[in-house]
Amino acid sequence: MEKRKRNIIHSKKRLLITCVIALAVLGGGAVAGVNLYLANSAAPVDASSATFVDVTIPRGSSTSKIGVILEENGLTRSASGFKLLAKLEGYDGKFKAGTYALSPSMDAIEIMDALTVGGSADTKRFMIPEGYTIAKTADKLEREGFVDASVFLDELENGAFDYKFMPALPEGPNRLEGFLFPETYDVFAAATEADIINRMLTQFDKEFRDEYYTRATELGYNVHDMITIASLIEAETRIDEDRPLVSSVIYNRLAINMALQLDATVQYALGETKERLYISDTQVDSPYNTYQILGLPPGPICSPGAAAIAAALYPADTEYIYYVLKPDESGGHNFAVTYSEFLRYKDQYIKSL
Image 1: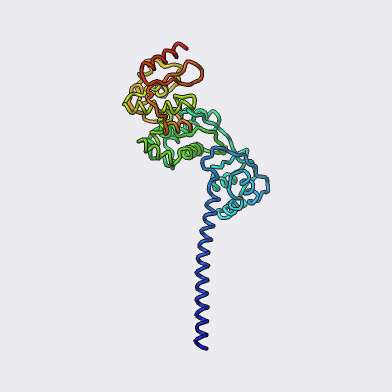
Image 2: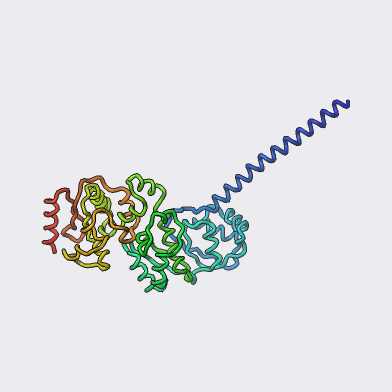
């Protein structure tokens, strides 16, 4: 009887230990599951999106209601996940009513930060076209009341910015030339020069994806070189279908150590846009003058858009060495392999003038 009693006690102990171990395992799995759920809820719905959605948060909205509104507008994957994150991160009860410009590329914390500041009256929108230089960008933003141009330019040269591409950039006033991604932006009215620069650099960081870094390495260049090439393509072309072809001309000339002789680089060196360049213009003493130097200029000459960046990374496979504007108003180019072809196209263009 005593032996049987001891066996029962041992069996109960084993059962208790087994239950504890099982609960620990299940608990660990549950914690891992919750962590995965929170990470998924915190991540952007679409990190590559450049669009913004106007979202109105009514007065008296609970965090649950706000989560539903965000989910309905494609700004969070889970309303309940948003609510849980808001409680864990200390945002619950701090959100303000108003209309907000929010993007699927924003993560949950960025959206929560925005919702605690205030809505519509506190946001402003600006647009930077493709092909703008930092000087033109500063001037436009100052004219529209977003920045003090001198402060903006000083921040571009000396500000501290933490992005993957920053180590590849040279020091100096042109450090961020080419990296202020051309796009339409919504920013808070109280945004500083640094805030606006960070907004544009963040967009560039999203556009220049990880596979682009890999591709640049395959081509033997870094991100700064690629944006330099992309800026040349942007400045030299007007239509999308020409961009991979102009890119091929650039690479073909680089391969045979032939001067690029691009008018856009002379314009940048001169600091002004001329309707027509003369031989005297192409003799300007500047490291950006590709009539006088071999290889690439020291950096980008403008901010390229997504199409020009893609063309720089993936040029067309051609033997073209030359191109000339077509004698029409299409904005397209005629491309040539031989110098005689080039002269024929050039003569057609000159006659059209």
